[in-house]
Length: 527
Image 1: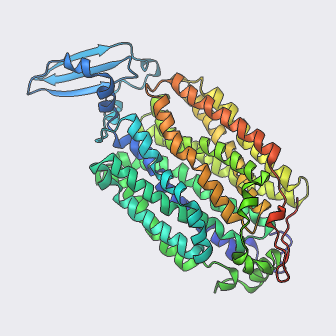
Image 2 (image 1 turned 180 degrees about the horizontal axis):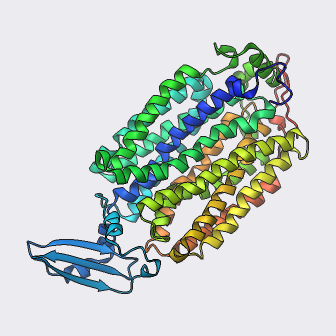
Image 3 (image 1 turned 60 degrees about the vertical axis):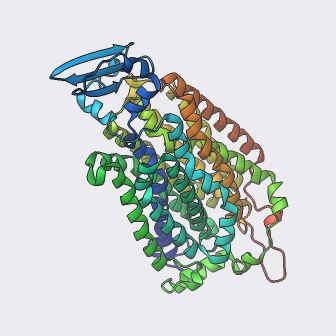
């Protein structure tokens, strides 16, 4: 808040920045509950049993076991290698088919790693895992527009609280549902997605009446950084809980995140107010500053009719949607499948998987915060227009990760640390795209930002449904070559989204988003 300390408290004592951090913790809870299944499924599922059921029937039939035998089946690769060891009367007998591709990595033959791979108790095949991982996005996508209407009518405070409360309750019920049936989990996750559609638009709708235009990037990115910090935290924390064996191991993942979500709900209800004028603890000078920068028309925005036809035919809006869809393919694919990739190709055990999955999202968290301040500085100091600032951030956040994913696709488990470094750069630099396309809704239509962002979010959730299932179908044998197809597809989509956004993207308020009446002021942003 440079230059405004004479009329308002500094940022570190301001209510709006306090609410940004509270909202960020709300995003943390939301994405912990969205991403918990991605790591938990690694230790929930008995991958050894799944692989043998798919590839090893004839081999198991050739092994004769007595009623006193205790059998352990260890799958050591794709369909080219299955090792079966049975123990009976103190005598071990072994049968190995094919050549194991894992010996060169030097970490797969230990008894500890074998136990880690057999830790799960649920026998869900790859296709079922893909469907369950995408289940949440069915519900999230289906009612986004309805959720935005509810946010407009009830306000963020109530809607976000309702969404987080029911998401948390359903998260607590996930273990019981998983023991019952994977299809029950699919339904439960879809219902969670509906309530998730309440929380995310509600958290962003706050900034329509709380964020001065020159601070919009940083306040929204502080809020959204909770997404990335949660994604970074969910992998190592979930892996730790799986290894801890408390409450059965993987069920503890859902119990902890559900309880945290319920606790945050009560904090939100106490701290949050929909408008500065309603907040009982805001400094009067800060309230005056926010209202002066936004204009008095903020109080009349709810009654303004939404020009849906002009919105849906607006080229700048369509450019954002295209860029967000292609980017979401990348980010949602990584969120749901990164632990699986690290297990199948890089051959990390559950402990290393959680630790290494954390690093790329920590980098993304830092890049988003740094990028938001850089974007605001470029605009505030007039070094670049809003349009070129958003395009610059989007190009770096799309093209560079796409190129790095192509390089990554040629690496295998013998180059695992190089692969982690490239993943860190790809996912980390991808955070700059948030400072481009995510903020761009508020540039082109500050009045309707929540509504148009909700529509774009609904469309861009299609990759969340498709990506896990497509990955499961392509990587059926868990080979690097199959994952290479996934990464080339992702890089191509990122390149396509970048080109479309460069052609169609704009950074100034569109004509259909300007209020013109006798009681409201026109709202415009620097371009």
